[in-house]
Image (cartoon, rainbow, N blue to C red; front, side, top):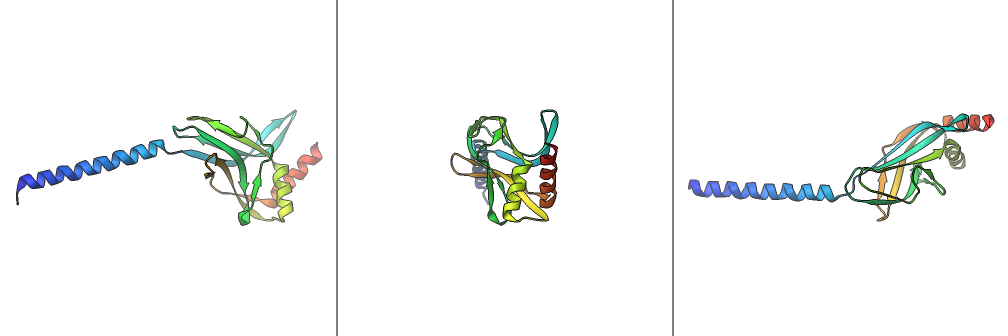
Length: 160
């Protein structure tokens, strides 16, 4: 074996591997990185507090992203759209690097949707935003008690 050919082949393989790594790193840097979370929370409302769902989106990437429609994904492929979302910035929103937006969904709206669909027991929900290119960005799923949500909403109505 010729040592010169082995060294040349090794250098060529290293060059190809480095080029591939650079290409993948550039693609990852230019890709959209959107993180969506859905959780339950409490927000102040006058002298009282309201139970809500908080749908939050963060632009963790370096590209500016325009998000158009916040939704909660329900069982059976159904979705709960926010027609007039209450949020920290207006919706649709344009988020630059590290910016975020939180949509506040009143528990009464969710309870009303559960009642319309006849949902009971444990229900898996996830939050999602659609961007201007039509790409849907989803949160992880969370389990909630549909009956518990409806009861919290009923208690909130009784306090008002």
